[in-house]
Image 1 (cartoon, rainbow, N blue to C red):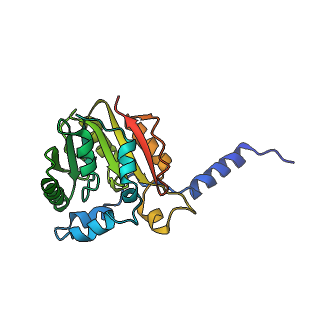
Image 2 (cartoon, rainbow, N blue to C red; image 1 turned 135 degrees about the vertical axis):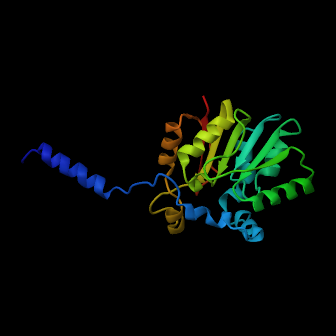
Image 3 (cartoon, one colour; image 1 turned 45 degrees about the vertical axis):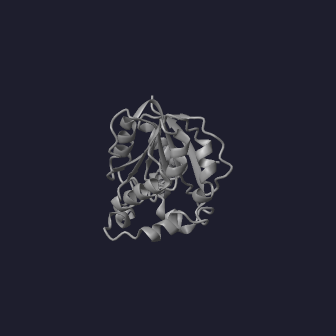
Length: 231
């Protein structure tokens, strides 16, 4: 049997590269177009984000319990949307803590403020972010929570730098996002989500975060939960 030559090996490697899909560097801006629309319909998105068909909605209390928030902490809910987690975070960090709800849609932030006022939550504030910055003061938060939002980052490197700046030394970045597994993940999510779990972890580590041993998350199937620390 003929031994493979260097030329054979190079050809094989080139063929493998040619058939391996390239992961886009960031999300297609079109993914965020609905949230830039001044006519954004809050009810439509509330029904979508806060319905039993959404896994993180069903698992919301388990997620909050797993991420280890403590009284007095400052937690940023980046990509808060309709504010699904805001009430739970507010209760966890208590009156000496603070919840910073961040979104690129002012309509969502208005809803968060309205709900917080109705519930008497005095430790909640909102910030209008951009697609490349959370617009949070440097070194001001203990935890940055990003749920089903990482795949919306158009410039992950820039946004991660923004979150790293916002976190205090030793602060945690918590990512909950959709799996992207061929043959298991739905066709819609395969087209909607840019990168798989391994790629997301690699990107965040490359940005200077250190991955921690995260809590077990048996309550998640469509999504995964990973935790990082700002050195």
